Image (tube, rainbow, N blue to C red; front, side):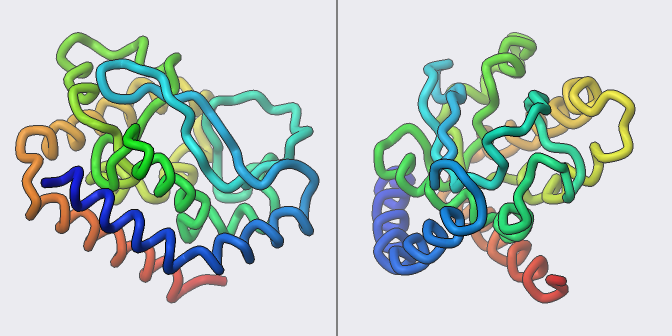
Length: 201
């Protein structure tokens, strides 16, 4: 049932948002050098790698090679990318991943292999279902970049503190992957985005 909902909602969203995709693509090309999309290998269901699709929000010639972004104004992020990230616009191309079948609208956010390799056997159960565009952890840690901004070692803090909490929240959905939970998470995500738009500055 959830897969059916994924296909219908993702297809409708892509059709409705197609003019916006064109506008976003033009803005990205006009404001910084590089491709429109950012492609990255992530770990999906059953530990299988797949290519995650996002709108590019970073400069392509940055020297910083950290796996995570730090602070809302990370110097790798373009001015347009800042707003795309704030409003989660950069995540929209993952609707294509949903149609392909390597992601769901709702599910644990897919991680890089370097982080998944650190999972315990118990934590690896988040790989039993399709990763998603949004989940409880995405909602709770909406401002994750700001949490990491003042840490001496942001990546280590993420591994030791944020990642375990995210996995616990992911397991909450895994234990009850119902249609009601699916729509609840989508609703909470939409509310979160609206709250980001209202005070936008």
